[in-house]
Length: 121
Image 1 (spheres, rainbow, N blue to C red):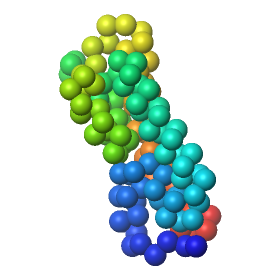
Image 2 (image 1 turned 90 degrees about the horizontal axis):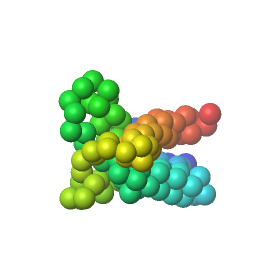
Image 3 (image 1 turned 45 degrees about the horizontal axis):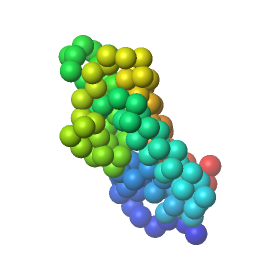
Image 4 (image 1 turned 180 degrees about the vertical axis):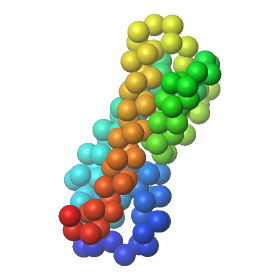
């Protein structure tokens, strides 16, 4: 079953909900796997102390904040009061920040790959 959504809309939906582009293209198991792994990694990073905003304003912190936005809908979970900022006072907070950043980048990669799936590559 091939997707009939127009090009840009499928990319936006794929970014917003991790794995949705795969689901709409008929790859149900991959969609569930991508959703669980990306959302789980993001939430795990939040629970380890990684927030979506950093209190330091250096260049690396800004790049990491932008990469966390790539997680799409899970990023909204990070807007909850206890998860918003990362203190980075411990190694666990730094690891949590890496988890949230990596999950955002993985979601962008998965959303971009939906175009190749639509072309049959």
